[in-house]
Length: 496
Image (cartoon, rainbow, N blue to C red; front, side, top):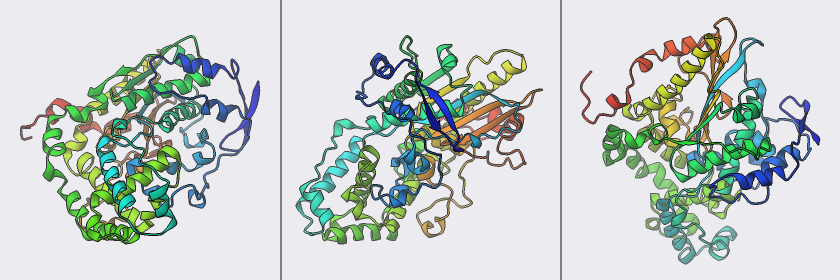
């Protein structure tokens, strides 16, 4: 059966169901060792096969939807992917192929490296404890009569438990299944049934359950799409690549386990902007200011964010914040990410040297095979990790670097900063590196972040959006010739 599906330019094409509607169910049962029950509703199949024809839109306005919190765009690393790409709210499988702009029609995609954050997850046990403390205060002490407060006190139950501890939720399963389908539409010559069956697509993951399950979900998105039930596809667990930060001794000692490394964060959390947020929360709850700490404000913000990300609910917890408050909460988290994972300390980005070299070695291998007239042996590399995997690498590459560092005292002047984790690192955030062969040795590399084109910082030529691969390598020559993980991560590094 074929149905009409509309894509970005409102042109309809036929998509054929292969193997019948039950194929997805059979295939789903065949995903070996899947620790998460996907349920009976196969969203991928439903989205593809309903036959509803709707155009790709970029003007979807989430602020018009009462089911979306007004502050959702400030949820930092706890935000939905849909807030970064609002057109997905209307059609979760929509793609805009016009973003791929190789310099000529003869250019063909020859390799894709996709470095992807895991999907939507439960809060960690540490945050659950903070939420529990806040909930007990609001339930038992807050005397207010507002309807939203009564709803928290009489209808909402504290359903988060410590054993959830960051595990992938059903929404996170769907994040990766849907992303897999979209990438197959963006890169049909690379992410294809033929390439998957032929072993040309490689999967690598962090050992954390949320990453392994995201990887399984990504694979399930493809096997369901093509109704593959007669094969299973392996993945490799590689923490050296996907959790390099754990194995970089200098980072662990000087930043991760060093309380003074985040002094700017501590000062901001005790500063006037944050104090005003906690006071406004106390006013809304009609409790003494001393009852609401910065940890409680964070817990309330996370409750609003998790209820929305996991259950798509505009929770009454969100009523504790207005937009000004949310911007302060966003900055507090951005400040933490800046100093712990990004430009705050040089070792933050240098800890990702191993992943940087891995990506370029795959690109070089594909480039060498093409130049030798051979088939590219690894068409696609899918690597699933964490926000802490992506951010150091983005920093190493120079993305989202503002002229001034984020500090505890310059909140007011950072309103237009480019360093915004809400935009950079939602659940299922992804960095895509697409290598093109444009003939006669003309190789090009296009970077995309969250399915949107970006430009390598410092490459400003007319072809900067899809630069010559050699120009990219020249731009990062110092890193390619150095940036040795073992050397950078030594605790007592010799002076240069």
